[in-house]
Length: 503
Image 1 (cartoon, one colour):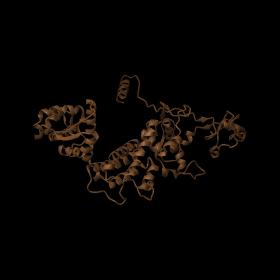
Image 2 (image 1 turned 90 degrees about the vertical axis):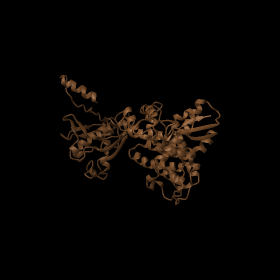
Image 3 (image 1 turned 60 degrees about the vertical axis):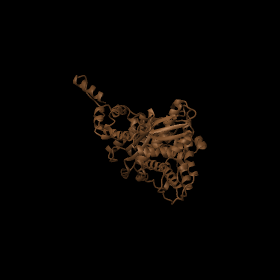
Image 4 (image 1 turned 120 degrees about the vertical axis):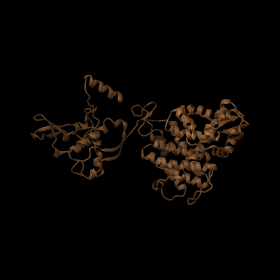
């Protein structure tokens, strides 16, 4: 955009030309040779020429005595319609037999919806109470023609004094096309998917979920049979959560929550907060992704969660998924003991007190550690492991990471960051390592954890996860601090990313 402005400045300075505005409007050919549409109100008279139908005779009504299938214009088959008299000389004349493009009508139909009982005019002044339309949703293929001329016609109606609003829509969402086999889905290409077949095989909830999850509304949706099957499997996984023991509806959350339960409650309430906002912004795909992440986390840990926590989470997941997959959520809602419909239930409120950044950071630590162990195991091509040592970074590195995040948010100057870090007594003792770490983290900020929890918390978290890790990798797992390890890899330990030694 800046380049265009600079080029325009130069052209004007050299006297080669001057700026002008191109609105990119083009003439719209509105005549169609078909029955369904508004008859074009024009009469042809041999004596008077082309004569518009008088305003008091509008609208011209479609005739019913037409013959279809002749290959010509259907209106031309109706003699009662075609043969008329000239409004000027009253002599014999003929009507125009083309109809208007239906976009002419759909460019202002919302005004008619707002005054449906009006019989004498297009619409009445009561329509202004509802106008403009709060949210209009249309296909991307209509963006250039229909949606532009809706604005055009609205402005004409305003200038005629028929409405006081010059814009028809407050907000506009244009939906993307559906793509299959690399081409736009259409009957002519023979690549149309019959929704009835999907509904018969998977149910309507699966079809709804896939369409809403596969792409944001304004983006192209690439149809995938595998994606449909994936959505079906997700709904099965979600439903399976109700097959575990759940508490009674009136039972409250227990006080003695484990770290895992605190984590699941945290991400559930975070999802409630985020999903509500995402739905308001029509970011359905992102909203469903966040719900899926919660469902997957709960499914992995369902055996280690108390019945009251299970009910709390499943109930709220059902409420969040209900707008997308109403049928399965109604069934789950009934299964949870509710007598009313979930569609009539209130949206859940996020309990901010249950959103715990440190607990979520702790879970990320476990997942990162599990992933790192699997990666090291694959790299070493080990089939059997006798021992895994998980080495946690010393406390000074946690102090360093916290301070680095704080300082680097204000400056990306490495020398300045090192200077400020060295002002800390704890870090000055490790000056050489600090000077080495700063450029590495500036180059790759992803190495800095989102939340720094400290050596003590990391050790507690991994100790709690140790039995699961031992079971998963079938070996002894040792959790040890960097300062207590003599292994050369110990120095590689960082906050949120322990060093891994496999024997």
